[in-house]
Image 1: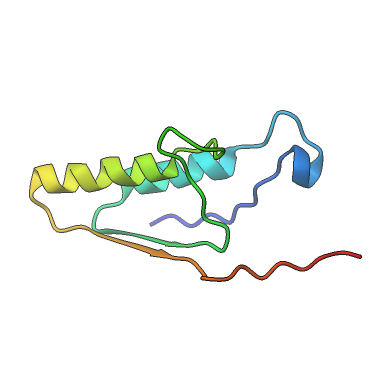
Image 2 (image 1 turned 90 degrees about the vertical axis):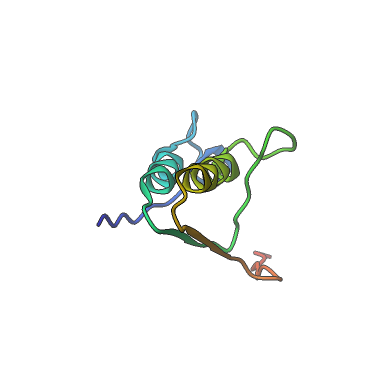
Amino acid sequence: CKCQIIRSLGKWSGGTSPAEISHYEAWVSAISEAQEYIYIEQQYFISNMGEGDAKNRIAEAILLKARQAIENGKPFRIYIVIPTIVEVETIS
């Protein structure tokens, strides 16, 4: 079992260029190594399957993992918890 606390940091949030992507790499690694289920709870979950503005491929990694479980005939669960309304504080 692994546990990692991560924080994304990019040009818009921290002025870094290129963006620091260890959080993205950690997501993909955790998804690909999952054995029984994937549980994601993320207020700002966004991904891309080839179109749109999101640059990450988290959704593709989830799809590949689900496909692998189906092909191997193993039970596998995917839970993604996201809010219907994202609370955003504005700075005035």
